[in-house]
Amino acid sequence: MDVIDRSGGTIALTLSSDTHLNDVKVAIRAAVRTAQLRVAQQLLADSRAFVPILSGALIDSGRIEVIPPITDDGMEVVRVVYGSTEVVYAEIQHDEPFHHPSLGFFGRALYLRKPYDLNKRYYYELFVLELRRALSQYA
Image 1 (spheres, rainbow, N blue to C red):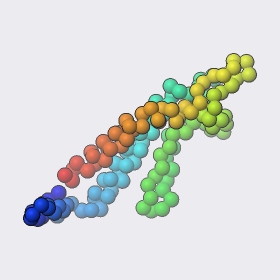
Image 2: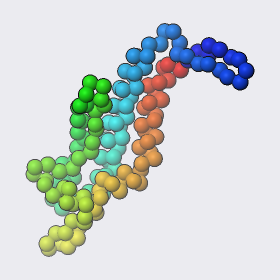
Image 3: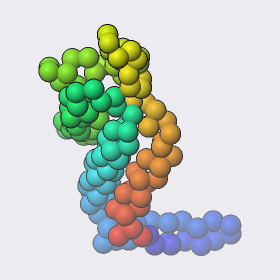
Image 4: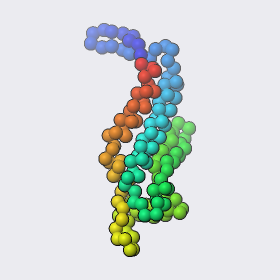
């Protein structure tokens, strides 16, 4: 970034002439995608401690999904998912403690929400770190 004018109590700043705004935009988009994936990977890892394990099917179904953007200028959505067609109880288990007929209550409810709430600040820091890395080449 270059200073183009210093007068009074103001400084006018501009991107250097060799910096193209499109390059900055591409770098930001790539950094956002990387940040989304890093946060999702960390949330998946953190949530495993909260997922109930009876047969192992629910914890084994945990994964990260990337949903393509709807428009050309849209961003992808990255989400952490548990469950599948074989593990249809994942949503029910997430919302309330699992009750097994012979074992009683087993596992914790909100196995994605709790680790997210506990680590939200850290996830934001991971996100910001990726953006800073991408933009540091233009400083």
